[in-house]
Image (cartoon, rainbow, N blue to C red):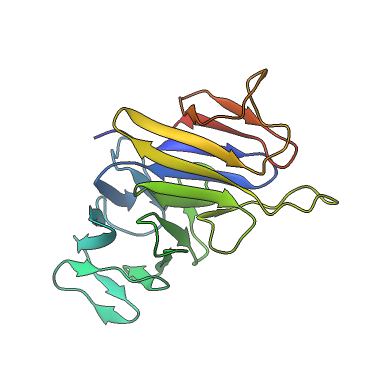
Length: 201
């Protein structure tokens, strides 16, 4: 399975972009080969989150509850639910828009991801980066700029494409672009409203 890429957005944060049908979550320590590692008292492999159509299922491998209800078998995740792994680690699962199978996974307890991450993104077929609350990654424009546009990622057979909607000054590297472009590792995207880079974990 491909490991998550990291989306670094200047002045906003960094996000693990999870593009696999299965994403493993476990404790952060040297040599533990999980997709998302948490610095906390949880199992080496605490759970797997599986994409099923537009939804996500969680398969627990240790004590896990959803909104206070302990899991004994795989369960469907619903937007806004709180996952508690072990006694203390808590995460929020959010689907900002039902028009996309993409979801955001954020730590709400005081724990930290291994690596400097703001959240993990469980990718479906599309992703929205923008100022609207329904964006998967919320990104405000610099002060003084009224931005109501977005960056739209969409899946194609051979990878991911990106389209800027109302993104003035959009360029990939040093080249101005107006048409959709292919997303590649190491890509530097710049505009008047936001700039970001996609890198390996």
